[in-house]
Length: 444
Image (tube, rainbow, N blue to C red):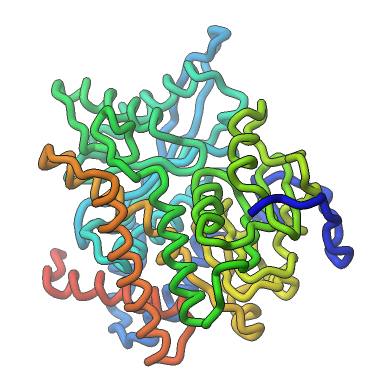
C-alpha cells in the first residue's frame, strides 16, 4: 500500500507525555503479571471442574532460580547483574522459553511468562513445558563485548538447569540469534562437545531453523486471518495498527500488508508513524534498517504518533506486540478495534479483558496468537536432534497447519462453552497439562 500524504492523528486522541515502549500506555510497574496469569488460570480451571486439591500442582512454578552475575565492563570495572530462570512445568516435556534483557525484568514477570509458555505449548499441542529467563540490564547502554560476557556468565551459572532434555532457552525481548549462539557455545564448551539443541532461535549456520525469525509474526498473520474469517471481516483493506515494531510486530505488519491489509500506524520505543492511507511497508522496513536508532520515528510521509494514541485509533485489527500490561482498566474503554491480536505476552490485564468483552472486541489471546515462535522453535529442536533440516517452505507449511488447527480448537471450545477466546484457550491448555499429570501420576 502506497503511503499518501501525512495526516493528523484524530483529535480525540490526547498526545502522550511518555513515548517509550518500556512501559507504555499505563506505565504501571505495580501491576503483577503473575497475579494476572493466575486470575486467567483460575477462571478456566473453575470451568473445567478440576479437583481443587490438585490445582496448585499445575498452577505454580516448579523451580525459580536467581543468580548474581559479576561481569567485567569495558572500562575494567566489575558490575553485578541479577538474572532469573523459572521452570513452570515439565509435565509434557522439557521446559521451553525465551530469555529477555530489560531494565524492568523481575521475578514476578519471569514467573508469569514461564507459566504462559506452559499454556502456549499446550494450546498448540507441542511436547514442551514452560520456562522463561531474564536479566536486569539495559542492553542499549552496553557494548557487544559486555553483552557477550554477561550472556556467557549467565549460561555458566545455569549449567545445571538448562539442557536439550531439561530446559531449552530461546530469544525474547532484546535478545537474538547471536545471543543464542553465545549460549550454545558456552554450554558446549562446558560439556566438551557441540550441543546445538540446547537453544533455539540460533543462526541457521549453527543449526537454526529456516523461518524461525519470522515465525511469531507469521503465526499472528494466520490467527488474524482466521479471526477475520470468523467475523466475516474482509482482510483486504482492513485497517491495522501495530504497537511494537520489533521482530514480531514488524513481521506481522509486513505479512498483513502483503495480504492487502492497510497498516495505518506502528510504534516502537522511540516513537511512531501514522498515516490513515496506509504506510508503505517496504519503504518503512528499509527506513528502519538504515536508521541510526532502528526506529520508525520520523518516517517520511507519516505523522508522529505515541503508543497511547495508537491504542485509541479506530481500526479493524490492533496488534499489541510490545511488553505485558499495556491494555489496562484505565485505557481499555478507549480502544476502538474489532480484533485484538496479542503478539506480545500478557499485554491485556484481566480487568481490561472484562471491559473489552462488554465492548464486543474479539481477542485472539497471547497463548494462541504468538505461539508461532515456540512452534518453530520446536521444529528447530527436532531438526537439531535428528541432524536433518527442512526447507523454509516445509517449516512454514507445518506452522500454518498447527496454527490454523489450534485456532479452530480454541474457537470450538469458545462457542460450545459460551466463553471468550482467552478462557477457551486456557481451558484447552490446562486440560492437556492436567491429562498428562493424571496419566503420569503424582510422585510425592
